[in-house]
Length: 66
Image (cartoon, rainbow, N blue to C red):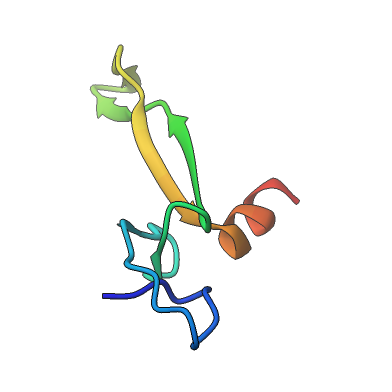
């Protein structure tokens, strides 16, 4: 699978898939961040100690931070 955002003349292998839109992305077009995972626990929420890796394409990342 090749990167969705790279030009068609350059076939760059994808290394991840965007969690928002599902586009395959190479290392250059991927944005990695971390989010805390929360579960419903009784009447409240429990937050896990380890953050979850969150990989998005650059277009979805721009939308998330705007």
